Length: 275
Image 1 (spheres, rainbow, N blue to C red):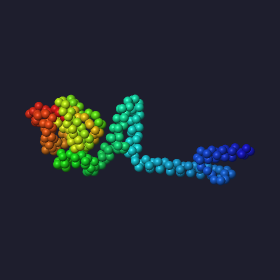
Image 2 (tube, helix red, strand yellow):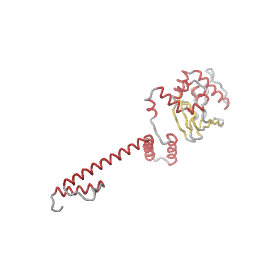
Image 3 (cartoon, rainbow, N blue to C red):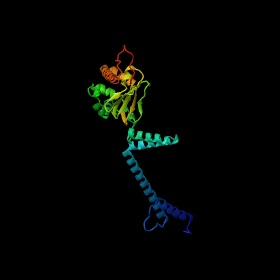
Image 4 (cartoon, rainbow, N blue to C red):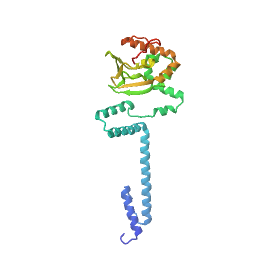
């Protein structure tokens, strides 16, 4: 090529560079004429493009097979960067990691958005199916009007607490009650009495009935999967089903008797202040 024209020299140099860059062979015999050189380079480009498109589509297909796990991993990477940026201590980082593992179990969905796009019958059917274990383990729901159960379940919010977390603290204003799907909690009263509650139980309803402050604390003894109900939603549901208010009051009075608080519920009495 020393005595060839600038165009031939440049074409052969480009051909060699593309051969090494794309790692595509051109057979046993290298092209000789300019037409062969440019046709070979064109075929290299087409082949490399097809290969890149194949890899891209294959990668997208694999990612789409488990998009919820990918979304969880992306979210947790942000959490890791957040913890690193604020230089959180190691034990706190470990607790955050364990919380995400128990709360999301490696998958993340925008559940509110998904359910919000469905019709009311489909939404109620899905919620009833997701909470079937809670309904089966809770006598209050097992014997109640199915419409009441559905109205209650649609307003519940799922929460996870780790061992040692205080779900309720003494002296705070009661804004939620909780239903235990899985786990064990301890009710700690002023007299150092400790009451255990487990799957199928609920707590925190007394303060919603009396609008008082909490005079006992509730601590998670194990990893607890709970459903919470806000005071506004609680009153909204009980306005539609007033007979269920009596059921909550009966359980509340029984608990008060067992922990030594004997003041009955009633509008003419001082407000009860336990949970």
